[in-house]
Length: 383
Image 1 (cartoon, rainbow, N blue to C red):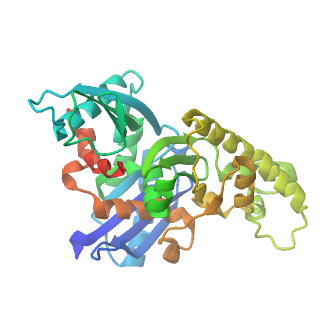
Image 2: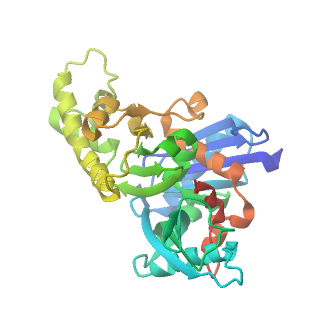
Image 3: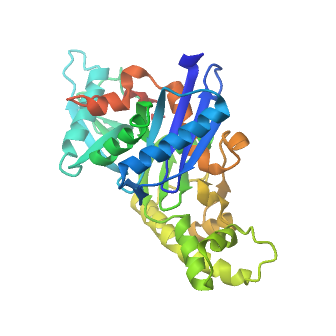
């Protein structure tokens, strides 16, 4: 059974989450146990004290062992933080085959060219994933896999999901120093989307907001493809701090007020709502700016899907609907059935990623290789 055990580790600024799952069945992985610990040694998503983070990861793993009665030897790890981003660029190749048939190698050449074109913009950064958005065959857009078609010139628009190289190395070291081998890494927003966003929503077009403690992950889907990604430095802690300052209460009490869990609170709810709305306005402005960059043709009929710890924020759906003028829904993964909260969405998404991951296309092995290969697992995102 050991080969079917998939472990996902999400190192958050406030909390480290671990899920141990069984991927024996063809359906989604079955959760065997969970573990958490308070994050120490992180600031704004960055590791500032590696030994402290290692201790925190070790504690979360120990708690997962108690819950699942299984000691993980290896795991899948999410990469988050404000250094994470998505850069859209284009790669080009000329088809040299005698019959002008586009091959897999031709397609990969466009991905390699796209990466080369972005080298200056991504100095000190590593590409975690290269996600093909669409191809242009002899000047004509094609929302399909171009391999097997005929052309003289192939262009592919690609989103390069990237992060600071030192940031990735620190995260991997934190887990491996805790005694667990990192099999592979993936971007946190993508991991969350595996668990929280269904294919119909991705096909129709939607935006997912994973609201964390100190940052919010934004990912936009259209035609089943992630077309934009951004991390903004605003999260649920900003709301807590604003309430604490405005109402002059301890942050522990402000956190309860934020979630609406203080029944019969002496504080005026209208005033609290205005504080929350004012604080969240910064986040919504960033979301609007991203959507504006994508253009008016991106209409997102499936609306906004909210997950992460910020999904617990009182009145979050109404606030988001009023700000973005889109349908809004708070989403939970299957992890919520056991974990009891949306904070485990990324960790469970990692288990899904691990259950479907192909070793020869390991993102981590690509990062360590002297010449980067295309992470072709992501070709499934093509419509």
